[in-house]
Length: 201
Image 1 (cartoon, rainbow, N blue to C red):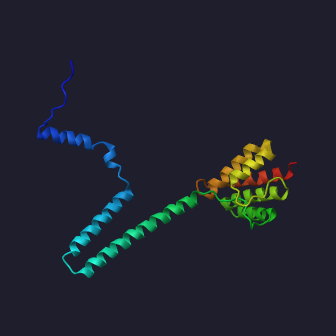
Image 2 (image 1 turned 180 degrees about the vertical axis):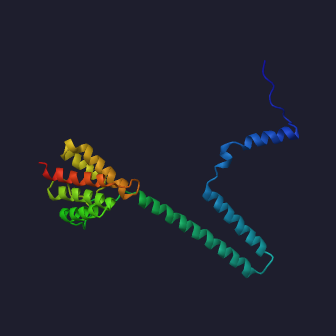
Image 3 (image 1 turned 90 degrees about the horizontal axis):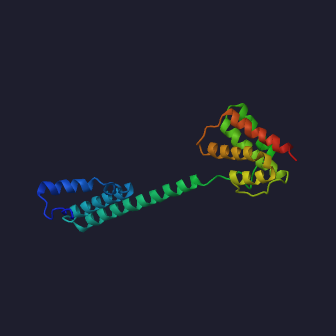
């Protein structure tokens, strides 16, 4: 025997309860923040135009112009924020076209380490390591190569050092983008790896 269906004509109290139960669902509350902001701007613009409709045409035109300028400014600002976020998420190159020599980078890294600037020491140390391997002919000179591209090439040339090279590339990225504060041991490890690979055949 089939269970009776819901009443077709709920009472007022029952209808309000059903509506409250329905509106509790999450999909009604997931409106995007940007959409809410644009809706608010649109309401402000409509309110301004409505208020200006009782005044002369110049006031209404100026109100619409100000509203349009606000919307355009918001769109430009949001597109710039999105572009900056994309640029920040793009990995920075280890090998640049106009770079110092490996020896100069190494001196810079050692000076930074002695002054307690561990992040700079690590970043310059990894760059010195990469440039040295280019100078030795063990790494292709690819300006724009990221730390992990450099690490993959070095791991192919020095398979026994694959783990150390991969860890150094991870440290380079984490330090450069601020996800991980470099400690003195991290910088020492990268400089030591540079020495080991420089002496490897």
